Length: 287
Image (tube, rainbow, N blue to C red; front, side, top):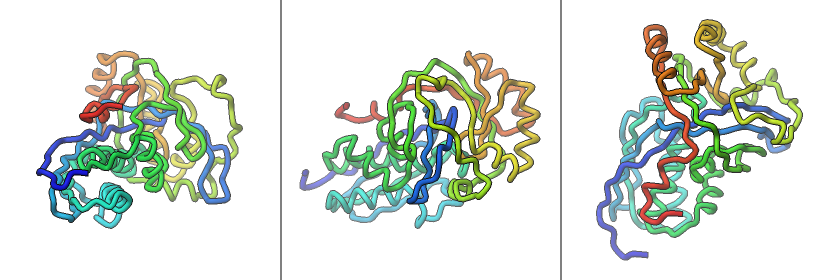
C-alpha cells in the first residue's frame, strides 16, 4: 500500500446491458428468484470521472437527479470497498448519466461495478476480480456481470455467470418515460414464476421470451401501444424488469436507419452489442 496518493483523474466506462431473454424458474425462501437469462453488453452507457485524493470523504456530482446520495450505488460501492480494505483515501465521483433509471439496462449496477473496479486500482486495494464480484453481489445481483465485463448467460439470482461469445447484432433502444422498480416487479403476485429450468443447449443464444413482459404490459398500457407500433420495424422485446423496448438488427446500417425513422415518434438510440466491456482495458494491470 502506498503511503501517499497523488490526485488521479480519469474517466471510466459503465456500459449498459440487455436481457436478451429472461425466464423465471421460481421464488426462493430468501425472497429472491431463480432465473435463466442471457446478458448482452452494449457499446454505450454511463461514464464516471473518478478523482482520488488523500481526503477521506466520498462524494459525488453530475446529472444525478432522482438518485438521492443515500440510495446511490456508486456511493455504496465506494464505502463498501473503503471499509473492507481499511482505506484512508477519499474519492469524488462525477457521474455522466445516460442510462435512464428503471430502464432494465443495469445502469446503477454498472456504475457500482465501475466504482469497485476503478477504485480497486486507484486505491491500490489489490483485490482479485472474483473478490470484487463477490463484494458487488452485496450491492445487487447484476453487479458481478459488470465486474467480470463479459456478455454472459446466467442462472441462480443472475450472479452465476458463464461468459459467451454472441453473434454480432445491433439494437435500437426505445425509452418510454417510465421508471420501473425491479423490486416492485419481483414482488408482484401476478409475475410468472414457473418457467421450467432448461438445458443451456436447448436455449438459443439470441433474443427470446421475457417472463416479466406480460406483467409489465398489464401494469403500463402505454407499453402495449408502443410494442404494437414497433412491430412495423421488427420484433420488439422488453429488457429485464425495466421499461426499455429493444429491436434487434443484423447490421449497424439497418439499426441506424430504423432509429432515424423512429426518432420523430420516440426517444431512441441505436447501439451495438459487444462481448467484452471496455472497462478492463482502462486498467493499467490487465487480467
